[in-house]
Structures are given as structure tokens and as C-alpha cells.
Image (cartoon, rainbow, N blue to C red; front, side):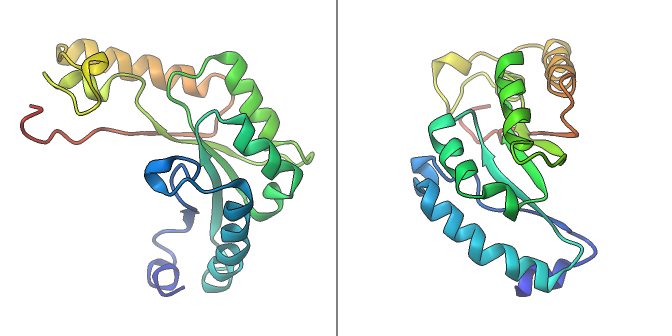
Length: 171
């Protein structure tokens, strides 16, 4: 509550928990995440009536999203958020269908995407060999451009670029 009130007018969009299903962030069940939204959503709206709630902040995980849709997920959010890493047209169509499952038109934000571009700047990678081996900046810039065009093509309202931070010895 205090954080939302402090940043009112400066930060009015609040995404509730990053990839909650992911074990790195707690491995929340659909039921637990809905309970969290049930607690946080009214607090955020009370602290800032102009606030927009973003959820479920997910990658393509149907077994996690679909149970929440059945239990009223969309009633608690203003903007459907997802992470669009390497999603093809069929997956993006599914995300847009989920976002409108209650018949309401709402914005859809890709709140974390880089394709493979951010990690390709580094000679080594914290993610392993699949992403290791830096590429020239011009090639990486082209990757970013292709990612942004692909993410926007199906009607996503906003795309947020995510860059991995290069820690030594990954430079």
C-alpha cells in the first residue's frame, strides 16, 4: 500500500509477481496466485484508483493459466501480461484468446521479451552454451527489431525489452 501511494502518478501500472509458476520465484499454484491477486488488487486500487493491474505475468503455460481463467482471473486485472520469448503466431493467438476469454476487450502487454538478442551480446552466458557467443552489435540490433515486429504484429498493445545484465566474467 505504501509503495503504491508513494509512486502514485509516477507508476500507475502494477504487475503482480514475476512468473509465479516458476520455481525460481516460488512455484505458486494457480489457487495461491489467485489468492494473492485477491489480496493485492483491492489494496492497489485503494491506494491508487487510477492504477492498472497487470497479470498473470507468464510465459506460455496453459496448465497454469487455464485453471485461473476458470476461477475468475480476468476479474482482477486490467491488462493481460505475458512473456513473449520466441512465441509463434499460434501461441500468441492463444494468449490473446485467454485475455478476452470473458468477452471483455482489454490491453495485452508483452512485459518481458528479448528474443535471443540481449544474451547474444556476451561472449559467455549465465544461461549456458545455447546462448553463448557474442554477435556483432548490428546483428543483435536486427534481432531486437525482428522481435519487436513479431511481438506487435498480432495486436499486442505494448512490448517491453528485457536485457540480461552482463556480470563479469560473462563479458
